[in-house]
Image (tube, rainbow, N blue to C red):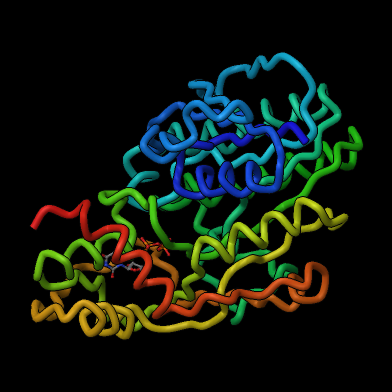
Length: 311
Ligand code: UDP
């Protein structure tokens, strides 16, 4: 297959480039490098099956030649990023998704949308199943991301129903691993960086809010299986093992031997209180479930961050 990966120089996008090349496909990574980095794909330079195109998918996408699949991963993805880039976040989720779908239609390519657990907002059911419609504040600071992704899902289903485009929607829950940006503000890079510097870990609020963390290789495997499947409706991919942010902080301090303890900081507005994917559907339809536990995955992540954090 010849595959376009938008956001291909980002954290998930670059891991997808690696996986698709390993599967024997040709890959075009497209990125405007606002939050992505060519560092993430530097090892692919010179690979004749790989090409990088610097482009903002919010603008019309022109691409020569045939295309079999588009993986649409372009978007700021951390709360700090989308608070700093609110208009770009809304535009890439709406205009960018429209452009990518238009390209999929023109090329007869399969289209996979990177959606998110944020479509569930601050969820009132637990764990979250795909049939839950969510609890999102449209005008809150996180609304720029949540509503853009909800619009992107609606647009994807419209292209499927109205134009017959073969579409897939993955709802991605918290994912971590090598190549996360050191300063993206998310909890994993923040805690790892702080722990490696011997500083206190910044726990927002009382730390009682929960998350469920999935290692990147597991996520990428779920994406690949979904792309190859026939499922049109959204599928949750994430690791259901849930813990509080306070427990997570204590675990990071224990793994790294950090003596810095923790420091409380205010809870961001509309920070979801609990989040855990129900992955019954992924298990049943894709035969997928995560394999890497938090201790293993965090060790890999810490090893990757260590040489990049200046003490
Ligand atoms: N968080 C924290 N300290 C940090 C960064 C994040 O306590 O330095 C909390 C944040 O309030 C949220 C959780 O960790 O409850 C996960 O935040 P993240 O930004 O990684 O992504 P989210 O899951 O909120 O999209």
